Image 1 (cartoon, rainbow, N blue to C red):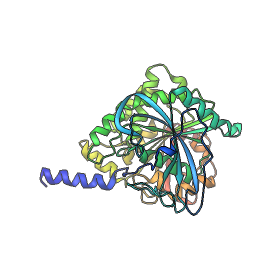
Image 2 (cartoon, rainbow, N blue to C red):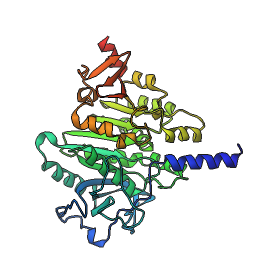
Image 3 (cartoon, one colour):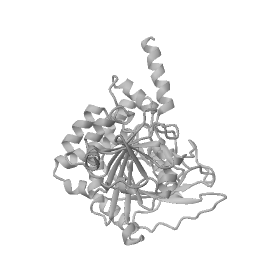
Length: 389
């Protein structure tokens, strides 16, 4: 195969495997609300849409744009920007999918923003999140932070967070970190550099979240966003902010696009990881296979080739290779995972770091298959295996 043919092959594979698509928010001037104004109650309609509205609080290291279809661009901002975007879920929504349009979305058929409210600074952002938390019972004041992956524009990321929150029935306040991905298939290297750049903003966001009145905070990174997560945790550890790490109730990296050697170095720099620390892997992940080729054949953490190493590092591994296709986005699209989460089958005690295995888990040779979903395999951290033997 010639160099040009190889390049063409990789480009086609990236087009098939890329995380994002060309979504637009669907905003106009009527949807923009001043920073200090109250956000009106959403209007839902099961026929004309939306059938539900998910408020998403946003911190982004993207530059502000005058284009309301993408109010934050792919350019890198020297300061963190803050906003709230309310996302409408269309009546025809199918769990696991993000129905989107590259032109102005139709709320009856597509995800679309119903309101957009930029905030002037981080304190207003914290205050508004606290107000949202205060509407919940004291034991339900939780935050779910999501960091998107490669090839996502601003709309792609907030839509995906709203989809996950809606389909999993998460009661937590949704907080999205949007790093300056180019949202273009051919700009993998730009995205990788932007994910590194984005660690500063994510570290700042995590410090702000630690000041909120949340009782629990779950941090989830997908694909290249997992690299930004690890870099932010490293920065916090190295600058003496272990209190912020202790504030996290759990970290999950879904299909992490991180070189295995780099990841081990990051873990060493972080020291004690937040618990639980979960990595979802899949040997069927075509996107990570392509990423490995682009980066010289180096294994990626999410490709399922380094499970024993992850166990030794005290990390719980979810192997989704045989789960609903095991694709790069299986964490967000799997009906099995959604059903297990809603029913409680996805062992909360294991995922919360409880060292006593539940009756739902069948343990054998260091792995456990969850009852009712044998295609998902859980590899326990080495510290738990040692305690059980």
